[in-house]
Length: 306
Image 1: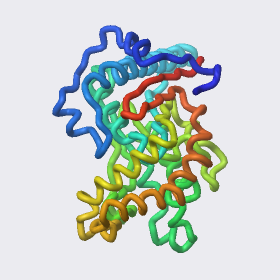
Image 2: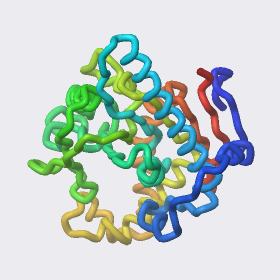
Image 3: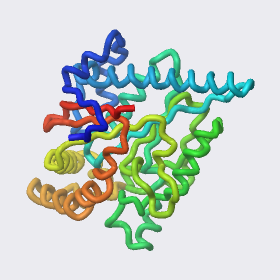
Image 4: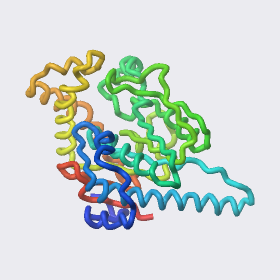
């Protein structure tokens, strides 16, 4: 439960705030955008995502109005810079699916057609560096990221630079891909999704979230997140892990009991500790907290009082 700094809404109360926001996605869009073991249907989009889209559109418009006021005060135009949204939460909490759906919805508003999605996975130190520093068992922890590079990227975004290179990460080889970059070109909105986006890196003096105009935290009971993580591991055993190039190919032929034990061990040693010690404590840095029930559906929404 969020503190008194937040306004709390039930699922039904939040759904009413959709007003007349149109539904611009179809079932086939959700099939393309949904992640493994992270089900989302059109009812969820209508009740949860559309009110968020409406709120963000209003926030984006207010930001533009503030820029106009500043221009009037200075007597000179103030250049527009991208509106930056952070999406945080644990491994297996559904961040990637949520961020992809949010991007699709926002991109269909006429006021901001160019929406880019950047994941912080690309800003992880390469495996070779993590191994050298003894950090492979702490991959995803704050110290495993090149926080300086992530901050530099956000500084370029907020400086209005129109062409920015972003490092690429492969979940198959479980590493940053050398010499492969994504290009961010003059976006209206940038969504930054990752475990660490509301945290402070060990090498940085400022917060990554200092560059956010709005931030969202996907929350759930720890027991549910752990179960989702284990279920996803079992599903990956039948899909990505069977790729010979997969870093996790060694797990592809585990039986159910072995796979469940392995996933639970990884959770206990790495992801559960990261959630408890580093991710969950940043929850109330978010502008919006979305709590997911055991069935993955959002059952409570907390909006920061401002």
